[in-house]
Length: 141
Length: 143
Image 1: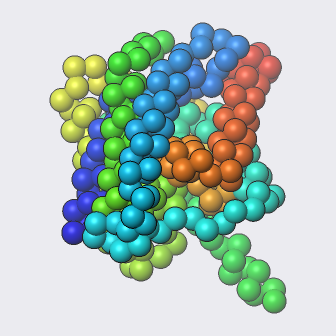
Image 2: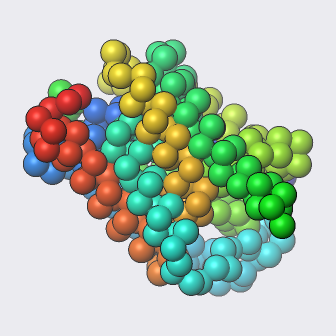
């Protein structure tokens, strides 16, 4: 059942991203370009997503249990540390340069152009590279 | 110039919020796409089949929407490959280091009013705006 839930959630997410044109880097960079011809589209996307998730999460959180997957698996980290801020800062720079974040990057692969594929190649390298860090540290110790 | 359509933006946002709610309510999971992708990439066999199915759903949903849409997204052409690769590298590195992206921190974490996610979201939006300003205006319109 968890597989069916994940598949439907992914479907809705993908439809939403493309309907909102989040998969169009011109729209995303247009939103980030506050000094140019500012495109407010992303404000509406984020507002729609946030209000819906806020209400949905409130209703869900009351029991602390999911329908099929047991207890809710929520992040437990609380501290605002250097990796959080540095990581977010680096992510923002990359987002501004490429015009894609991870979800739209995957979704845009379905448009059949090379542009998001190059982005995804770089992103996979970055994710795998960060994963290697643990191995390197373990090797040093 | 991409056209501004607030109705599609809002409707798409609501669908994203519904998707995040469904995954949490149904399976107890946070819809953080960088986390899901990171797990799939670092340990493809042990990532849990739900992560694979979520990504497959995402691809199918985007493909179907694009296919049936009266206003499909026009793919971007001719953008510098180096910028895409380097931008992607920073997105991959940064989202793993910071524990989330626009979906995990920006939507799910903010909806939970998590202080970590608020700090992350303000940070990545700020550096993204600064980067676009630098590339488009500060350096005299490189791209």
